[in-house]
Image (cartoon, rainbow, N blue to C red; front, top):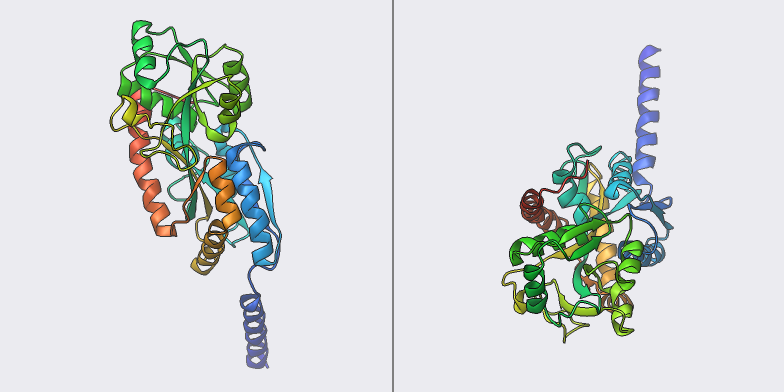
Length: 322
């Protein structure tokens, strides 16, 4: 009797586990955590992807904005979510390659708690100045900054953000002394540079270009190694007086570590298909984002190289976020 009961229990467990295994993925909505406030480039990218992925995967992909602490609040939530394929997170430069060197302690481990899926896009920044600054190019800006050490200021969307670290890299390589004014968001930064409270900023194309076109700001250069496809007339910082300079902000998708490889592969395949869509490519380039679509392994290697680069920049700048 006891043997028969044991066999029945084992059979029930086998049938139950088989049914679960056979359940198609995805079988319920997928949460897509964006560790920043709505409206920025990373949020725009996530919402474009979510819309297309929802249609492709037959389940709604829901964007969940969780801003705060330089992205750490949203990243921690993702890191501690079940590794079942129903949580994705926007993996950006700060979260994956900078914050671990800025903060003495993070509530997650960027190297162990995530499985990279793909790099979605590269986002070069543009160097813009207020019209009251007479510089017409990077060399002239450097000359002005050297003539007035500590008198020019720049804004960033927060300590440790790409806009902050990009400028610190510029300071180091150009040998200039300009003062950092950190803000709690990019909207405040833009308001103050247009108003003349800031001398210069390195900012995303999508948010600065309209002000440049309106004559409220002057664009000097772009931070990528090569000129950007949608702005072919804009020189790079490297060709404008700072040889070897390159700073690219980037955004990708990651999932909690331990997510099955089959699910990572499915998400990767679907995202790459979305990035190849003509309307998505056109929209990305217009907003200053170059589509990528790397493999999980390529994205992991990219993150590794970026950690080496930004660890040095953070150390040289002396920046701390605690």
